[in-house]
Image (cartoon, rainbow, N blue to C red; front, side, top):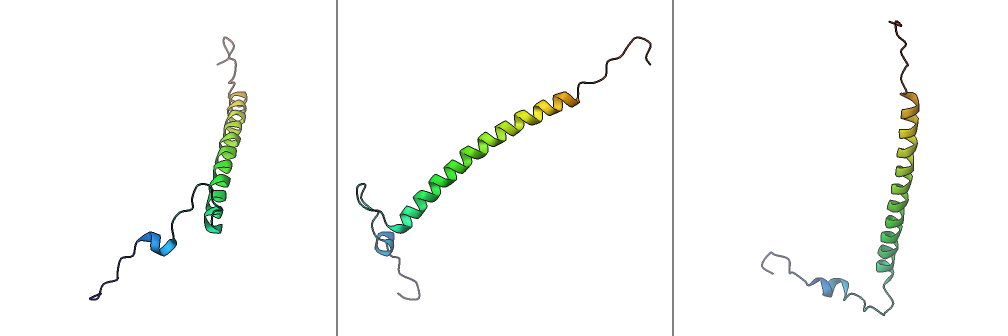
Amino acid sequence: MLGQELRTPVDLIFGLPPEPGSKARPGLDYFSQLRERLRETHELTLAVLAEAGIKQKRAYYIRCSGEDFAPGAC
């Protein structure tokens, strides 16, 4: 109208959100499954990183035990 695009409410473009007990649309199903997969991946990554950190710390302390100096060794 007069060189400007009309603003349309989002509900008219995409439809109303599904009711809590009703069958969800395929697009919303995809996003809920994606969110769940990302959450699971994040939890798995945190667990693996924690385990790797413990292993790296153990390996570091084994290597940096240092040398024992005896009197007169210098």
